Length: 183
Image (cartoon, rainbow, N blue to C red; front, top):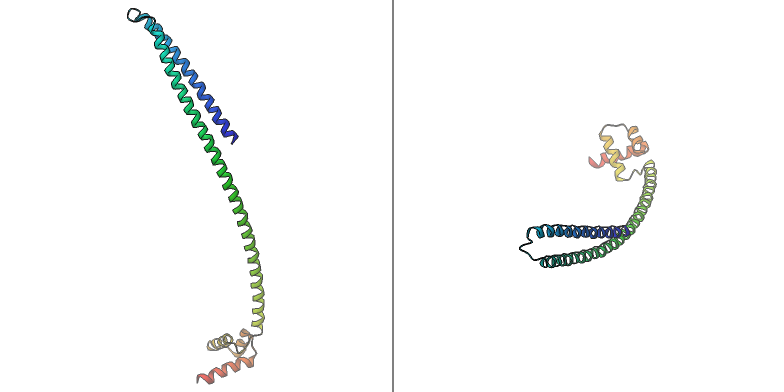
């Protein structure tokens, strides 16, 4: 913020120097005009009117320069206040964004922890399911359906027993019961 204020002050100083240079240029031109006009119009204009005109011209110039510098100063002060206000708003937003980022990072961390827990739970469920498959229940509908499907494909009782993890007698029983009820 200080650098912005320094830049505005430097700009104001530069404009004031520019106004002084312009004032000097106007005075120099007025003086050179006065000299050339005095030589050309010495018969038509009285010498007492030229200094009065010059004085009036300079007063108008100084009045206008003063008005412009006051307007510039007021604008500069408005810009300073606006800049300070914007910087405060940006600081507040930055603080809000940092807080939001911290909350988001915390939520992501919790989500990752929960995902890890679920993943570990899924692995535990998979181990239980694997145990269940190794000890298949011949009465379970899905086991019976698997046995019957494999039998329809023409697999032998031994092959069906290996694939369904059942004993040969259980496979034969399921197939015999199905044949009895569907006849």
